[in-house]
Length: 47
Image (cartoon, rainbow, N blue to C red):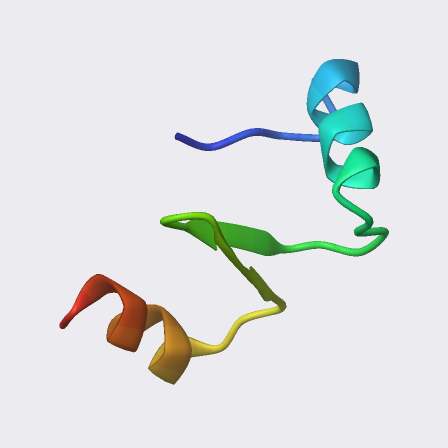
């Protein structure tokens, strides 16, 4: 599910509540990836 913090204030508060102040943040099975780390994303997705 995508969340756009520019359009969704609740999503912005959720991100801040998790301790993040920059984007993108990708959550995969509860693990956060800050920024774009293709290798880590692929590893967590098993591809």
